[in-house]
Length: 155
Image 1 (tube, rainbow, N blue to C red):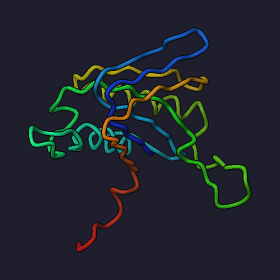
Image 2 (image 1 turned 135 degrees about the horizontal axis):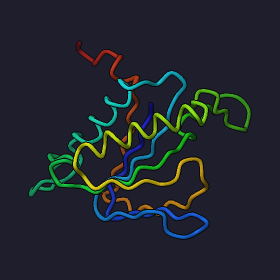
Image 3 (image 1 turned 60 degrees about the vertical axis):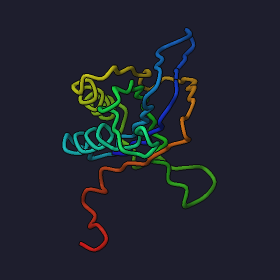
Image 4 (image 1 turned 180 degrees about the horizontal axis):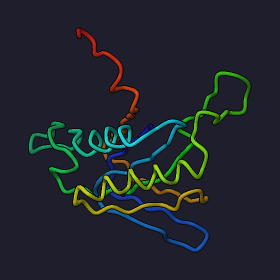
């Protein structure tokens, strides 16, 4: 499972019928589900995203998490984070989970964020949307659930 986090001053998603959701200061979380992802993957990335210290303290150092600052969260499904561009000019998305599987896992990620008590909004799964992001910093962080399986340097 992959998450792309963006610390934002504000963000919104719009669809054909207009505004779907918007947030103030917080995080936009783009979520991609891979074939074979499970609850353990969802828990890992949600916990990491919520507790990652990427918000500034009084000295402008990254010492506070989304939980510490009461960040608002906008979660958007984005299977394209599994684009494979190694061959040819058209990306392959063969690693991404099929929509029926991905929808259930995406909802599980949303539920985990909601359990945190933070204000959580979402885009619409499998719909074309315009995402408006006012990146704060800019701060953009990549999370991959497979990272929990990799040894850390010096370990």
